[in-house]
Structure formats: C-alpha cells, structure tokens
Image 1 (cartoon, one colour):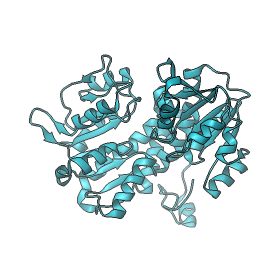
Image 2 (spheres, helix red, strand yellow):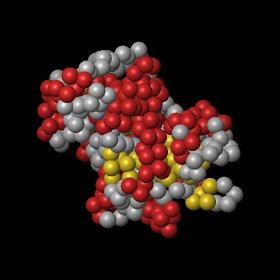
Image 3 (cartoon, one colour):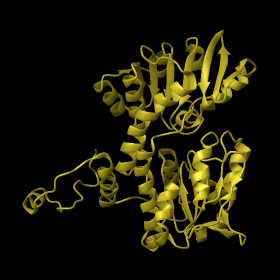
Image 4 (cartoon, one colour):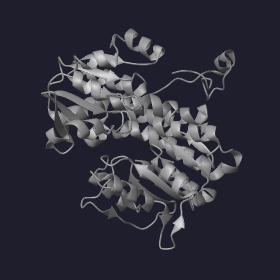
Length: 402
C-alpha cells in the first residue's frame, strides 16, 4: 500500500530518490528483489528482521521498486539491507528523501553517512519510537533537515495504533499458538493507543485483562474502561499471556520471568525487541531453549516453561501479517502526503519536527469514508459561523483530543 500510494503520487514526487522501510516485505528465495526504477525512485527494506512477507515484496518489486528484505533475516543482514537503500541505480546517486518506520534508516544515514544529509530534503516518520528519536535530535541540535511526525496524525495514531492492534494482537497470538483465548488472564503493559487496542483485542476474545502503567492518566483511563490495573511484577504472576506495548525497554525483565506461571505466553507489540529482556533469557536459560516452530520458542525458568513469540520483536508482524490493509492505508496516505509536502515545500520548514495540519488529517479520513459506506452531513454557513469554523473544515483545533 505504501508503495502503491507513492507510485500514484509519482508526478508530485518526480526526481525524488526515496529510501523507505516497509513492514511485511520479502522475496521468496531470501534475496533482494530488483526491478527498474519508477519516476519517483524508491528502494524498500523491511522495518525489522522478522517483518517481511514474500507476497508483499513480490508485488512491490513487480511495480518497479527494488526490495531488500526477507523474513527472518539476521541483524547483520538487516543492517546490510538498510545500506542498500541509500544509493540508487548504476550511478549510485544518494537518496534525497527518507520515509522511515522506527528511525533505524534515519539513524544510519545521520550517524554513519552524515555527508548525505545535505542532499536530503526531509524525513517522514511513522512510529512512536521513531518520532521520539527525532524529537531527541531536534532537542540536541543534531537534526539537519525538517521532519514530519506522521505518527501523531489522528488518522494514524488513533487508527493504525489502536484499531489496527485491536485486529492484529489476538490474530498473531492465535496463529502462533492455537491456544484458546477465552478464560485466560492477559496482562498488557502500557495503555497508550497500542495498549488500548491490544487490551480491547484480548478482552473481545474472552480474556480477563490486567493493565500495567506508569502514567496516572493512562492508568485512570484503563480503570474507567473496566480493566484491572496493577504493578507489572504483581500482574505477571497470574498471567497466562503477557503483551508489552510501551515503546520502552526492560518492561519484562529477569524478575518478571521468574515470577511467571508455567506455560505463560510472552510477546511484544510495542516496537523494538528490548521491551522484553530476551538477552536475559538467553544468557541465563539459553540452554533450555526449544524452538517449537519458527518464531515460537520455549524456555524453562525455574522449572516453568515460558513461550516467547517472535523473539520479542513485533508479534503481529513476526507471527502474522500485521494490521489489515485498510487501516494501514490511512497511515500510508499520511506518509505520502508528508513526502509530497516535504518534496515540494522543504524550504518553508526549519530543521525541526512538524505534524501535518488538521485539514490534511481530515482529508485522509474523508478519502476512506466511501470504502466503508460512510456518509456525513455538511454544516450550513450559519452553523459554521456559530462554532467558528469553515464549512469544509477543519472542524477541530490542533489541541483537540479525539
């Protein structure tokens, strides 16, 4: 979908040499799919090592976009794939746009190839983790080009993060384990948008859900939604399923593993694999590791079996195929609009992190209404004047919380 959206936007992105990571990419033989360049040249790679799907990669390669990804690649192979997206064609022309998903590509370019920064018009970033990295660079004065925070567009964070995880969280656990969800105790660490969607997914499947949080507002939200809220160490002791959704590190550490019940299922839907301290498992109990099937490993800790999914990486991508395409369409539409804006108007932006304006957020939503049979009313001029907006929007202020 991202590649298709960018292909449709090719006239607006003519001459752009765009490097992008992509969830659910790979080819069938574990190598790189090559194809001729499109007018807006792109090179795609997987957003993380376990996130590639052969069918998606084949479709993108057939559209004329080189793909460097395969499912289950090692960290070294993943880093090699990132580097293949930095230069284009036989002339090895450097990239001049970055479309990122997690910040790995951005970090490689800015930290290892700083000489390329001057030729890059801008960055668009789609994830909470990647956006935090950008804001940190802005704060430290090490962001050498403008960036658009796509993650905080309402039509991304409230749809991809929440509704996408509501679909894909349980789907991934079921595909990986075939376990009966109803009646299980599930712990969700974090009640941001991803945690909210995951908690709903598990509750809808019949689980009794416990939430752990550090933020009093999110904790209160979880309680008001009817979820139990407990400290993580207490919660995992009664869990049958543990899902991390924080974007932070060391959420499930050694003490948590030691407190868990036998046959507990542990997985991550946040971002990086350091939410779950897999290194602790491998260091202290690696000799007990038993690979049940790809992306499903069992460790024995103090006589109790712990089932780890996707090696602690994103479970909905490692053990399933991610979010449904419709909800991802909203995210990728935001990415495409951000890329067009930066390509055409980069000189209007300082080296800071920006969000898309509200009228573009509403445009993304409007583009998706007809597909699901939605019709909306229109304000009269008198009504619009009464609440101080234009008839065609935007309808909410920038600070409005949906």
